[in-house]
Length: 276
Ligand SMILES: [Zn+2]
Image 1 (cartoon, rainbow, N blue to C red):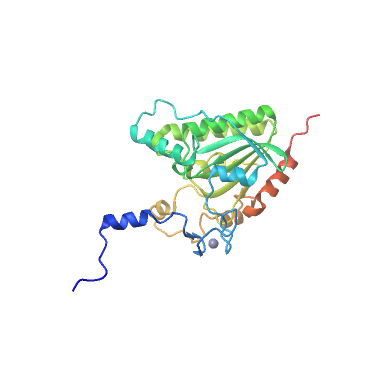
Image 2: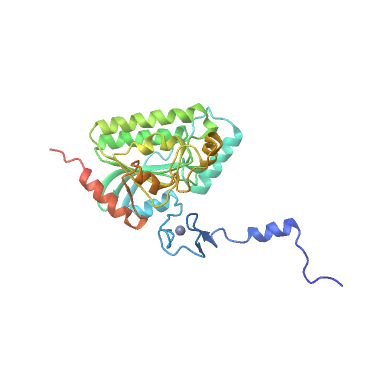
């Protein structure tokens, strides 16, 4: 007697799973609520307010009235000729339609003018490479010329390993550009989103005059496992979450995604430079 059900071969199975759309189910990483589709246009969890990861372009759409991109042609220096790395960059460019892990330009948010930088975790985990650092530096320099505030949406796994020491140097480079910008009396507003880690947290992402975060965003330097192995203790459950960092004074406020545009435009209005 033959069985009605024949076990599929591994290759048949993988063909079947390839046909399942990636966006069929979403599980909130914080409260574990499962949803078959995002219940709000801004992709937040209806239960706990967690903001799912957005692309830089989705952020532009959600936050700005107008946006003009700059430095679209900046890409990694030619001294990085490792073919695996170059392939990775190419795939990231194709997938995100960005030239680097940060999108930069000038925007209007509820009619308030500003420089805007949005990191995209879909581009090699928003990692900080030479071209990322160069784009951010150029934005702060251009915004200083125009005398407008800068808003940065941080999302990053940290320094880009493939670039070794060069990626670490971007921390100092961008930090210095931020310091020059602030010394000119201009305001820098940061929104920390899930996740903001490593060298990005340790430099420009926490240099803001005002530091906001999205609910439950993971923000930290070293990852949980590295810390656990080093100190031989389990860190508390709420460790490296926006709420814990707010309670300990690292950030100024947690803002629900639905309120971000209004909050940012209010902060920008207060901090526009009024030329005499
Ligand atoms: Zn949730």
